[in-house]
Image (cartoon, rainbow over the protein chains, first blue to last red):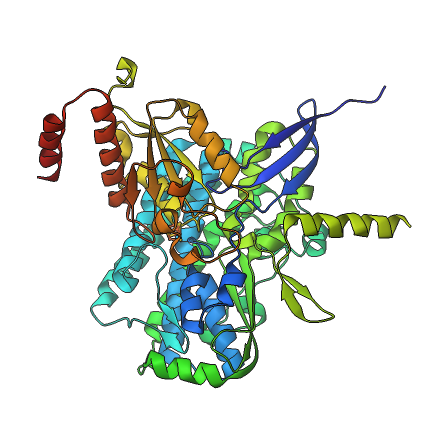
Length: 407
Length: 156
Ligand code: SF4
Protein backbone atom coordinates (compact mmCIF):
# COMPACT_ATOMS: atom_id res chain seq x y z
CA UNK A 1 0.00 0.00 0.00
CA UNK A 2 1.42 3.30 -0.94
CA UNK A 3 1.57 6.02 1.64
CA UNK A 4 -0.81 8.78 0.71
CA UNK A 5 0.32 12.34 0.99
CA UNK A 6 -1.60 15.53 1.48
CA UNK A 7 -0.91 19.07 0.44
CA UNK A 8 -0.53 22.17 2.59
CA UNK A 9 -0.32 25.48 0.83
CA UNK A 10 1.34 28.19 2.91
CA UNK A 11 1.22 31.85 2.02
CA UNK A 12 1.37 34.28 0.44
CA UNK A 13 0.26 35.96 3.62
CA UNK A 14 1.57 34.23 6.67
CA UNK A 15 2.99 35.23 9.99
CA UNK A 16 6.45 33.77 9.46
CA UNK A 17 7.72 36.25 6.88
CA UNK A 18 6.87 39.89 6.61
CA UNK A 19 6.88 39.42 2.86
CA UNK A 20 4.53 37.55 0.58
CA UNK A 21 5.63 34.19 -0.81
CA UNK A 22 3.73 31.02 -1.60
CA UNK A 23 4.87 27.49 -0.74
CA UNK A 24 3.14 24.26 -1.59
CA UNK A 25 4.11 21.39 0.65
CA UNK A 26 3.39 17.75 0.10
CA UNK A 27 3.20 16.10 3.46
CA UNK A 28 3.00 12.53 4.61
CA UNK A 29 2.31 12.22 8.30
CA UNK A 30 4.56 14.77 9.91
CA UNK A 31 7.23 14.64 7.20
CA UNK A 32 7.60 16.88 4.21
CA UNK A 33 7.85 14.87 0.99
CA UNK A 34 8.29 17.66 -1.49
CA UNK A 35 8.12 21.40 -1.75
CA UNK A 36 7.15 23.68 -4.54
CA UNK A 37 7.69 27.41 -4.56
CA UNK A 38 5.47 29.92 -6.26
CA UNK A 39 7.28 33.23 -6.11
CA UNK A 40 6.10 36.40 -7.78
CA UNK A 41 3.89 37.85 -5.08
CA UNK A 42 6.24 40.75 -4.59
CA UNK A 43 7.01 41.48 -8.23
CA UNK A 44 7.02 45.21 -8.92
CA UNK A 45 8.79 45.45 -12.27
CA UNK A 46 11.75 47.41 -10.94
CA UNK A 47 14.02 46.86 -13.93
CA UNK A 48 11.25 47.95 -16.26
CA UNK A 49 10.76 51.18 -14.32
CA UNK A 50 14.50 51.75 -14.34
CA UNK A 51 14.57 51.84 -18.11
CA UNK A 52 12.36 54.93 -18.06
CA UNK A 53 14.45 56.87 -15.55
CA UNK A 54 17.81 58.50 -15.56
CA UNK A 55 20.78 56.99 -13.78
CA UNK A 56 20.64 59.13 -10.67
CA UNK A 57 16.93 58.45 -10.24
CA UNK A 58 17.60 54.74 -10.50
CA UNK A 59 19.88 54.83 -7.45
CA UNK A 60 16.84 55.57 -5.33
CA UNK A 61 14.85 52.91 -7.07
CA UNK A 62 17.65 50.39 -6.55
CA UNK A 63 17.65 51.29 -2.90
CA UNK A 64 13.99 50.39 -2.72
CA UNK A 65 14.43 46.97 -4.24
CA UNK A 66 14.77 45.97 -0.63
CA UNK A 67 14.69 48.03 2.51
CA UNK A 68 16.96 45.68 4.42
CA UNK A 69 19.70 45.63 1.77
CA UNK A 70 19.32 49.31 1.06
CA UNK A 71 23.08 49.84 0.96
CA UNK A 72 23.93 46.74 -1.07
CA UNK A 73 21.82 47.38 -4.15
CA UNK A 74 22.90 51.00 -4.65
CA UNK A 75 26.50 49.96 -3.95
CA UNK A 76 26.44 47.34 -6.68
CA UNK A 77 24.48 49.61 -8.99
CA UNK A 78 26.88 52.53 -8.62
CA UNK A 79 29.80 50.21 -9.22
CA UNK A 80 28.15 48.93 -12.40
CA UNK A 81 27.59 52.44 -13.73
CA UNK A 82 31.10 53.55 -12.80
CA UNK A 83 32.42 50.47 -14.53
CA UNK A 84 30.42 51.25 -17.67
CA UNK A 85 31.21 54.96 -17.81
CA UNK A 86 34.78 54.73 -16.55
CA UNK A 87 34.28 56.94 -13.49
CA UNK A 88 36.93 56.93 -10.78
CA UNK A 89 35.82 56.94 -7.17
CA UNK A 90 37.93 58.91 -4.67
CA UNK A 91 39.57 56.69 -2.02
CA UNK A 92 37.81 58.38 0.87
CA UNK A 93 34.45 57.62 -0.71
CA UNK A 94 35.42 53.97 -1.14
CA UNK A 95 36.12 53.70 2.57
CA UNK A 96 32.88 55.40 3.56
CA UNK A 97 30.98 53.10 1.23
CA UNK A 98 32.46 50.09 2.93
CA UNK A 99 31.71 51.47 6.40
CA UNK A 100 28.04 51.93 5.52
CA UNK A 101 27.84 48.52 3.86
CA UNK A 102 29.32 46.84 6.94
CA UNK A 103 27.02 48.72 9.30
CA UNK A 104 24.18 47.40 7.21
CA UNK A 105 25.51 43.88 7.55
CA UNK A 106 25.51 44.25 11.34
CA UNK A 107 21.91 45.40 11.38
CA UNK A 108 20.80 42.79 8.88
CA UNK A 109 22.41 39.82 10.63
CA UNK A 110 21.10 40.80 14.04
CA UNK A 111 17.67 41.38 12.55
CA UNK A 112 17.85 37.89 11.11
CA UNK A 113 18.97 36.38 14.41
CA UNK A 114 15.93 37.89 16.10
CA UNK A 115 13.55 36.60 13.43
CA UNK A 116 15.10 33.14 13.65
CA UNK A 117 14.61 33.11 17.41
CA UNK A 118 11.02 34.15 16.96
CA UNK A 119 10.42 31.29 14.52
CA UNK A 120 11.61 28.97 17.27
CA UNK A 121 9.22 30.53 19.72
CA UNK A 122 11.69 32.60 21.73
CA UNK A 123 10.00 35.96 21.68
CA UNK A 124 12.23 37.28 24.42
CA UNK A 125 15.27 36.59 22.26
CA UNK A 126 13.64 38.46 19.40
CA UNK A 127 13.24 41.45 21.68
CA UNK A 128 16.78 41.17 22.94
CA UNK A 129 18.31 41.03 19.47
CA UNK A 130 16.25 43.88 18.14
CA UNK A 131 17.20 45.96 21.12
CA UNK A 132 20.84 45.28 20.30
CA UNK A 133 20.11 46.21 16.69
CA UNK A 134 18.72 49.66 17.50
CA UNK A 135 22.21 50.88 18.34
CA UNK A 136 23.47 50.47 14.79
CA UNK A 137 20.30 52.03 13.38
CA UNK A 138 20.92 55.08 15.51
CA UNK A 139 24.43 55.32 14.16
CA UNK A 140 23.23 54.91 10.59
CA UNK A 141 20.73 57.65 11.20
CA UNK A 142 23.44 59.97 12.46
CA UNK A 143 25.72 59.20 9.53
CA UNK A 144 23.19 59.08 6.71
CA UNK A 145 20.03 60.74 7.96
CA UNK A 146 17.82 57.68 7.74
CA UNK A 147 17.27 54.46 9.61
CA UNK A 148 16.53 52.54 6.43
CA UNK A 149 17.06 53.47 2.76
CA UNK A 150 20.08 55.58 3.56
CA UNK A 151 20.40 57.52 0.32
CA UNK A 152 24.16 57.50 0.83
CA UNK A 153 25.51 56.20 -2.44
CA UNK A 154 25.99 58.32 -5.52
CA UNK A 155 27.66 57.64 -8.85
CA UNK A 156 31.30 58.42 -8.24
CA UNK A 157 31.24 58.47 -4.46
CA UNK A 158 28.99 59.06 -1.49
CA UNK A 159 26.69 61.93 -0.59
CA UNK A 160 27.74 62.56 2.99
CA UNK A 161 31.10 62.69 4.66
CA UNK A 162 32.11 61.14 7.96
CA UNK A 163 33.55 63.95 10.04
CA UNK A 164 35.72 64.05 13.15
CA UNK A 165 32.66 64.66 15.33
CA UNK A 166 31.20 61.35 14.24
CA UNK A 167 34.21 59.38 15.38
CA UNK A 168 33.45 59.03 19.11
CA UNK A 169 29.89 57.98 18.29
CA UNK A 170 31.07 55.33 15.84
CA UNK A 171 33.63 54.07 18.36
CA UNK A 172 30.91 53.80 20.97
CA UNK A 173 28.80 51.65 18.67
CA UNK A 174 31.71 49.41 17.79
CA UNK A 175 32.50 48.94 21.47
CA UNK A 176 28.83 48.20 22.11
CA UNK A 177 28.91 45.35 19.61
CA UNK A 178 32.14 43.97 20.96
CA UNK A 179 30.51 43.83 24.36
CA UNK A 180 27.36 42.35 22.91
CA UNK A 181 29.26 39.42 21.44
CA UNK A 182 29.22 37.54 24.72
CA UNK A 183 25.47 37.98 25.08
CA UNK A 184 24.77 36.88 21.53
CA UNK A 185 27.06 33.89 21.86
CA UNK A 186 25.44 32.81 25.13
CA UNK A 187 21.95 33.25 23.77
CA UNK A 188 22.35 31.75 20.32
CA UNK A 189 25.28 29.39 20.37
CA UNK A 190 25.41 28.06 23.91
CA UNK A 191 21.72 27.72 24.63
CA UNK A 192 20.75 24.03 24.71
CA UNK A 193 17.21 24.53 23.47
CA UNK A 194 18.27 26.55 20.43
CA UNK A 195 20.87 23.89 19.70
CA UNK A 196 18.23 21.15 19.93
CA UNK A 197 15.92 22.92 17.52
CA UNK A 198 18.59 23.87 15.01
CA UNK A 199 21.26 21.15 14.99
CA UNK A 200 20.73 18.61 12.20
CA UNK A 201 17.75 20.56 10.96
CA UNK A 202 17.49 21.83 7.40
CA UNK A 203 20.77 20.37 6.25
CA UNK A 204 22.35 21.38 2.97
CA UNK A 205 25.48 19.51 1.99
CA UNK A 206 28.60 21.04 0.48
CA UNK A 207 27.75 19.43 -2.89
CA UNK A 208 24.21 20.74 -2.87
CA UNK A 209 25.43 24.21 -2.04
CA UNK A 210 27.74 24.07 -5.05
CA UNK A 211 25.16 22.57 -7.41
CA UNK A 212 22.47 25.02 -6.43
CA UNK A 213 24.94 27.94 -6.55
CA UNK A 214 24.01 29.14 -3.10
CA UNK A 215 25.69 32.33 -2.02
CA UNK A 216 26.49 34.23 1.13
CA UNK A 217 26.10 32.84 4.63
CA UNK A 218 23.84 30.07 3.31
CA UNK A 219 26.69 28.69 1.22
CA UNK A 220 29.38 29.43 3.79
CA UNK A 221 27.45 27.50 6.44
CA UNK A 222 27.74 24.45 4.20
CA UNK A 223 31.49 24.88 4.07
CA UNK A 224 31.78 26.68 0.73
CA UNK A 225 34.41 29.36 1.18
CA UNK A 226 32.76 31.90 -1.05
CA UNK A 227 32.72 35.62 -0.43
CA UNK A 228 33.07 38.36 -3.04
CA UNK A 229 35.08 40.41 -0.58
CA UNK A 230 37.62 37.59 -0.46
CA UNK A 231 37.47 36.26 -4.01
CA UNK A 232 37.42 39.48 -5.98
CA UNK A 233 38.31 42.26 -3.57
CA UNK A 234 36.90 45.60 -4.60
CA UNK A 235 36.53 49.08 -3.21
CA UNK A 236 38.19 49.43 0.19
CA UNK A 237 37.99 45.67 0.76
CA UNK A 238 40.95 45.36 -1.58
CA UNK A 239 43.18 46.93 1.10
CA UNK A 240 42.15 44.37 3.68
CA UNK A 241 42.61 40.68 3.90
CA UNK A 242 39.12 39.30 4.32
CA UNK A 243 38.54 35.62 4.83
CA UNK A 244 35.21 33.90 4.27
CA UNK A 245 33.73 32.72 7.55
CA UNK A 246 32.72 29.08 7.77
CA UNK A 247 31.28 27.38 10.86
CA UNK A 248 34.38 25.24 11.49
CA UNK A 249 36.14 28.38 12.75
CA UNK A 250 33.87 28.23 15.77
CA UNK A 251 32.84 24.64 16.23
CA UNK A 252 35.55 22.77 14.34
CA UNK A 253 33.08 21.03 12.02
CA UNK A 254 30.75 21.80 9.15
CA UNK A 255 27.28 20.29 9.22
CA UNK A 256 25.42 22.67 6.95
CA UNK A 257 22.46 22.84 9.31
CA UNK A 258 20.53 25.79 10.68
CA UNK A 259 22.84 25.99 13.69
CA UNK A 260 25.81 26.50 11.36
CA UNK A 261 23.99 29.32 9.63
CA UNK A 262 23.55 31.00 13.00
CA UNK A 263 27.27 30.62 13.74
CA UNK A 264 28.28 32.17 10.43
CA UNK A 265 26.05 35.19 10.86
CA UNK A 266 27.00 35.86 14.47
CA UNK A 267 30.70 35.67 13.60
CA UNK A 268 30.20 37.93 10.61
CA UNK A 269 28.80 40.66 12.81
CA UNK A 270 32.16 40.81 14.52
CA UNK A 271 34.05 40.54 11.28
CA UNK A 272 32.15 43.66 10.20
CA UNK A 273 33.15 45.45 13.39
CA UNK A 274 36.80 44.72 12.57
CA UNK A 275 36.40 45.90 8.99
CA UNK A 276 34.88 49.19 10.14
CA UNK A 277 37.69 49.66 12.64
CA UNK A 278 40.23 49.15 9.91
CA UNK A 279 38.43 51.66 7.67
CA UNK A 280 38.31 54.28 10.38
CA UNK A 281 41.98 53.88 11.21
CA UNK A 282 42.98 54.17 7.58
CA UNK A 283 40.37 56.62 6.33
CA UNK A 284 42.10 58.62 3.56
CA UNK A 285 41.68 62.36 3.26
CA UNK A 286 40.18 63.95 0.20
CA UNK A 287 37.05 64.35 -1.84
CA UNK A 288 33.97 62.20 -1.40
CA UNK A 289 32.52 62.67 -4.87
CA UNK A 290 34.25 62.62 -8.23
CA UNK A 291 31.66 65.01 -9.66
CA UNK A 292 29.62 66.96 -7.12
CA UNK A 293 27.42 68.67 -9.72
CA UNK A 294 24.62 66.25 -10.51
CA UNK A 295 23.63 68.01 -13.73
CA UNK A 296 27.15 67.74 -15.05
CA UNK A 297 27.33 64.11 -13.93
CA UNK A 298 24.11 63.34 -15.77
CA UNK A 299 25.53 65.06 -18.82
CA UNK A 300 28.58 62.79 -18.74
CA UNK A 301 26.45 59.70 -18.26
CA UNK A 302 24.24 60.71 -21.16
CA UNK A 303 27.24 60.58 -23.43
CA UNK A 304 28.60 57.35 -22.02
CA UNK A 305 28.41 54.12 -23.94
CA UNK A 306 29.27 50.68 -22.70
CA UNK A 307 28.44 47.85 -20.36
CA UNK A 308 29.26 47.54 -16.71
CA UNK A 309 28.97 45.00 -13.94
CA UNK A 310 28.96 45.74 -10.24
CA UNK A 311 29.29 43.05 -7.60
CA UNK A 312 29.02 43.35 -3.89
CA UNK A 313 28.79 40.93 -0.99
CA UNK A 314 25.44 41.85 0.52
CA UNK A 315 24.46 40.47 3.93
CA UNK A 316 22.68 37.62 2.18
CA UNK A 317 25.33 36.92 -0.45
CA UNK A 318 26.55 38.20 -3.74
CA UNK A 319 24.49 40.84 -5.49
CA UNK A 320 25.21 41.63 -9.13
CA UNK A 321 24.03 44.62 -11.12
CA UNK A 322 24.51 44.85 -14.84
CA UNK A 323 23.98 48.01 -16.83
CA UNK A 324 24.22 48.93 -20.48
CA UNK A 325 24.50 52.58 -21.37
CA UNK A 326 23.88 53.68 -24.90
CA UNK A 327 24.36 57.43 -25.17
CA UNK A 328 20.94 58.23 -23.90
CA UNK A 329 19.32 59.52 -20.77
CA UNK A 330 18.00 56.12 -19.71
CA UNK A 331 19.99 52.91 -19.53
CA UNK A 332 19.34 50.46 -22.30
CA UNK A 333 19.42 47.46 -19.99
CA UNK A 334 19.50 47.21 -16.25
CA UNK A 335 19.61 43.86 -14.58
CA UNK A 336 19.85 43.18 -10.88
CA UNK A 337 20.44 39.76 -9.43
CA UNK A 338 19.90 39.53 -5.72
CA UNK A 339 21.31 36.78 -3.50
CA UNK A 340 17.96 35.32 -2.50
CA UNK A 341 17.41 34.45 -6.14
CA UNK A 342 20.29 31.99 -5.87
CA UNK A 343 19.47 30.82 -2.42
CA UNK A 344 15.84 30.04 -3.14
CA UNK A 345 16.60 26.62 -4.52
CA UNK A 346 18.52 25.77 -1.36
CA UNK A 347 15.17 25.37 0.31
CA UNK A 348 14.42 22.24 -1.67
CA UNK A 349 17.13 19.99 -0.17
CA UNK A 350 16.80 21.70 3.21
CA UNK A 351 13.09 21.07 3.56
CA UNK A 352 13.19 17.50 2.28
CA UNK A 353 12.13 15.03 5.01
CA UNK A 354 11.80 17.73 7.64
CA UNK A 355 8.90 17.99 10.02
CA UNK A 356 6.10 20.48 9.49
CA UNK A 357 7.04 22.27 12.66
CA UNK A 358 10.50 22.97 11.28
CA UNK A 359 9.21 24.76 8.20
CA UNK A 360 9.38 28.28 9.65
CA UNK A 361 12.94 28.07 10.94
CA UNK A 362 14.26 26.35 7.83
CA UNK A 363 12.60 28.92 5.60
CA UNK A 364 13.98 31.72 7.71
CA UNK A 365 17.44 30.16 7.86
CA UNK A 366 18.53 31.36 4.41
CA UNK A 367 17.43 34.85 5.39
CA UNK A 368 15.16 35.22 2.40
CA UNK A 369 14.54 38.62 0.98
CA UNK A 370 11.60 38.29 -1.33
CA UNK A 371 11.57 41.95 -2.22
CA UNK A 372 14.99 41.53 -3.80
CA UNK A 373 14.18 38.40 -5.65
CA UNK A 374 10.80 38.86 -7.29
CA UNK A 375 11.72 40.32 -10.61
CA UNK A 376 11.15 39.11 -14.14
CA UNK A 377 12.54 40.58 -17.34
CA UNK A 378 12.33 38.83 -20.65
CA UNK A 379 14.79 39.59 -23.38
CA UNK A 380 14.33 38.07 -26.80
CA UNK A 381 17.87 37.16 -27.78
CA UNK A 382 17.13 36.90 -31.50
CA UNK A 383 15.85 40.41 -31.97
CA UNK A 384 17.30 41.69 -28.68
CA UNK A 385 13.92 43.29 -28.16
CA UNK A 386 12.93 43.64 -24.55
CA UNK A 387 9.46 42.51 -23.88
CA UNK A 388 7.26 42.09 -20.88
CA UNK A 389 4.85 39.24 -21.29
CA UNK A 390 1.39 39.05 -19.87
CA UNK A 391 0.28 36.01 -17.98
CA UNK A 392 -1.70 34.69 -20.94
CA UNK A 393 1.28 34.98 -23.23
CA UNK A 394 3.49 33.28 -20.70
CA UNK A 395 0.99 30.46 -20.39
CA UNK A 396 0.90 30.05 -24.16
CA UNK A 397 4.69 29.91 -24.27
CA UNK A 398 4.79 27.41 -21.48
CA UNK A 399 2.23 25.14 -23.13
CA UNK A 400 4.09 25.37 -26.41
CA UNK A 401 7.29 24.33 -24.70
CA UNK A 402 5.65 21.32 -23.11
CA UNK A 403 4.35 20.25 -26.52
CA UNK A 404 7.82 20.68 -27.97
CA UNK A 405 9.34 18.50 -25.34
CA UNK A 406 6.65 15.85 -25.71
CA UNK A 407 7.19 15.54 -29.45
CA UNK B 1 -22.67 51.24 14.50
CA UNK B 2 -21.50 50.83 18.07
CA UNK B 3 -18.21 49.20 18.86
CA UNK B 4 -18.51 45.91 20.58
CA UNK B 5 -17.79 46.32 24.26
CA UNK B 6 -15.09 43.68 24.11
CA UNK B 7 -13.12 45.73 21.64
CA UNK B 8 -12.63 48.43 24.14
CA UNK B 9 -9.25 50.08 23.87
CA UNK B 10 -6.53 47.63 22.96
CA UNK B 11 -6.10 47.59 19.23
CA UNK B 12 -5.06 44.40 17.53
CA UNK B 13 -3.26 44.95 14.32
CA UNK B 14 -2.77 42.79 11.26
CA UNK B 15 0.08 43.59 8.92
CA UNK B 16 -0.29 42.99 5.20
CA UNK B 17 2.50 43.44 2.69
CA UNK B 18 1.26 44.04 -0.85
CA UNK B 19 4.65 44.16 -2.54
CA UNK B 20 6.61 46.71 -0.57
CA UNK B 21 10.35 47.09 -0.36
CA UNK B 22 10.42 45.78 3.21
CA UNK B 23 11.60 49.06 4.65
CA UNK B 24 8.29 49.89 6.23
CA UNK B 25 7.72 46.29 7.24
CA UNK B 26 10.84 46.04 9.35
CA UNK B 27 9.90 49.30 11.01
CA UNK B 28 6.57 47.71 11.92
CA UNK B 29 8.42 44.83 13.55
CA UNK B 30 10.73 47.35 15.25
CA UNK B 31 7.60 48.82 16.82
CA UNK B 32 7.08 45.68 18.85
CA UNK B 33 10.59 45.54 20.19
CA UNK B 34 11.88 47.18 23.37
CA UNK B 35 12.80 50.60 21.95
CA UNK B 36 9.23 51.42 20.88
CA UNK B 37 7.30 48.65 22.60
CA UNK B 38 3.77 49.39 21.43
CA UNK B 39 2.39 46.57 23.51
CA UNK B 40 2.42 48.97 26.41
CA UNK B 41 -0.41 50.79 24.62
CA UNK B 42 -2.26 47.53 24.10
CA UNK B 43 -1.33 47.43 20.43
CA UNK B 44 -0.57 43.90 19.38
CA UNK B 45 0.37 42.34 16.07
CA UNK B 46 -1.82 39.30 15.35
CA UNK B 47 -1.36 36.44 12.94
CA UNK B 48 -4.80 36.43 11.35
CA UNK B 49 -6.96 39.22 9.96
CA UNK B 50 -9.92 37.60 11.69
CA UNK B 51 -8.55 38.73 15.03
CA UNK B 52 -7.68 42.26 13.98
CA UNK B 53 -9.23 45.68 14.54
CA UNK B 54 -6.76 47.53 12.40
CA UNK B 55 -5.13 46.63 9.09
CA UNK B 56 -1.66 47.98 8.50
CA UNK B 57 -1.11 47.86 4.75
CA UNK B 58 2.32 48.43 3.22
CA UNK B 59 3.35 48.34 -0.41
CA UNK B 60 2.08 49.69 -3.70
CA UNK B 61 -0.28 46.73 -4.45
CA UNK B 62 0.87 44.57 -7.31
CA UNK B 63 -1.38 42.52 -9.52
CA UNK B 64 -0.82 39.26 -7.74
CA UNK B 65 -1.52 40.64 -4.29
CA UNK B 66 -4.64 42.59 -5.25
CA UNK B 67 -7.15 39.74 -4.74
CA UNK B 68 -5.45 38.92 -1.44
CA UNK B 69 -5.69 42.53 -0.30
CA UNK B 70 -9.42 42.49 -0.93
CA UNK B 71 -9.79 39.12 0.74
CA UNK B 72 -7.92 40.19 3.86
CA UNK B 73 -10.00 43.35 4.01
CA UNK B 74 -13.20 41.32 3.86
CA UNK B 75 -11.93 38.87 6.46
CA UNK B 76 -11.28 41.61 8.99
CA UNK B 77 -14.36 41.95 11.16
CA UNK B 78 -16.20 45.26 11.38
CA UNK B 79 -15.71 47.81 12.82
CA UNK B 80 -12.23 48.17 11.46
CA UNK B 81 -9.76 50.83 10.45
CA UNK B 82 -7.24 50.67 7.62
CA UNK B 83 -3.88 52.37 7.88
CA UNK B 84 -1.62 52.70 4.87
CA UNK B 85 1.98 52.75 6.01
CA UNK B 86 4.52 54.34 3.69
CA UNK B 87 4.50 56.56 0.67
CA UNK B 88 4.39 53.73 -1.83
CA UNK B 89 1.06 52.50 -0.49
CA UNK B 90 -0.39 55.99 -0.27
CA UNK B 91 0.50 57.17 -3.76
CA UNK B 92 2.69 54.62 -5.52
CA UNK B 93 5.85 56.44 -4.49
CA UNK B 94 8.92 55.37 -6.42
CA UNK B 95 6.96 52.55 -8.02
CA UNK B 96 4.36 54.79 -9.63
CA UNK B 97 4.90 53.81 -13.26
CA UNK B 98 5.22 50.05 -13.27
CA UNK B 99 3.13 47.70 -15.35
CA UNK B 100 2.60 45.43 -12.41
CA UNK B 101 1.42 48.00 -9.88
CA UNK B 102 -2.31 48.57 -9.63
CA UNK B 103 -2.30 50.67 -6.48
CA UNK B 104 -2.38 52.82 -4.52
CA UNK B 105 -4.22 51.01 -1.79
CA UNK B 106 -7.13 53.43 -1.58
CA UNK B 107 -8.12 52.62 -5.14
CA UNK B 108 -9.25 49.21 -3.91
CA UNK B 109 -10.23 49.40 -0.26
CA UNK B 110 -11.35 52.32 1.93
CA UNK B 111 -8.44 53.81 3.84
CA UNK B 112 -8.75 55.79 7.06
CA UNK B 113 -5.23 56.90 7.88
CA UNK B 114 -2.20 57.57 5.68
CA UNK B 115 1.28 57.54 7.17
CA UNK B 116 3.61 59.07 4.58
CA UNK B 117 7.35 58.57 4.56
CA UNK B 118 9.75 56.37 2.68
CA UNK B 119 10.40 54.69 5.00
CA UNK B 120 8.30 55.96 7.85
CA UNK B 121 9.72 56.26 11.31
CA UNK B 122 8.25 53.96 13.95
CA UNK B 123 6.95 56.98 15.86
CA UNK B 124 4.90 57.94 12.83
CA UNK B 125 3.23 54.53 12.79
CA UNK B 126 2.31 54.90 16.47
CA UNK B 127 0.77 58.25 15.61
CA UNK B 128 -1.12 56.62 12.75
CA UNK B 129 -2.51 53.89 14.97
CA UNK B 130 -3.61 56.58 17.40
CA UNK B 131 -5.53 58.29 14.62
CA UNK B 132 -7.18 55.01 13.74
CA UNK B 133 -8.10 54.57 17.37
CA UNK B 134 -9.83 57.97 17.29
CA UNK B 135 -11.81 56.83 14.30
CA UNK B 136 -12.90 53.72 16.12
CA UNK B 137 -13.85 55.90 19.09
CA UNK B 138 -16.09 57.84 16.75
CA UNK B 139 -17.74 54.61 15.71
CA UNK B 140 -18.09 53.85 19.36
CA UNK B 141 -20.50 56.72 19.69
CA UNK B 142 -18.39 59.58 20.97
CA UNK B 143 -19.63 62.90 19.68
CA UNK B 144 -17.54 65.12 17.47
CA UNK B 145 -16.86 67.62 20.26
CA UNK B 146 -15.55 64.97 22.61
CA UNK B 147 -13.27 63.64 19.95
CA UNK B 148 -12.00 67.12 19.14
CA UNK B 149 -11.14 67.47 22.78
CA UNK B 150 -9.37 64.14 22.75
CA UNK B 151 -7.39 65.10 19.66
CA UNK B 152 -6.34 68.29 21.36
CA UNK B 153 -5.26 66.33 24.41
CA UNK B 154 -3.29 63.97 22.19
CA UNK B 155 -1.59 66.75 20.28
CA UNK B 156 -0.82 68.78 23.39
S1 SF4 C 1 7.19 53.55 1.48
FE1 SF4 C 1 9.31 53.40 0.79
S2 SF4 C 1 10.34 52.32 2.44
FE2 SF4 C 1 8.17 51.99 2.74
S3 SF4 C 1 7.74 50.05 1.73
FE3 SF4 C 1 7.34 51.69 0.26
S4 SF4 C 1 9.21 51.93 -0.90
FE4 SF4 C 1 9.71 50.80 0.96
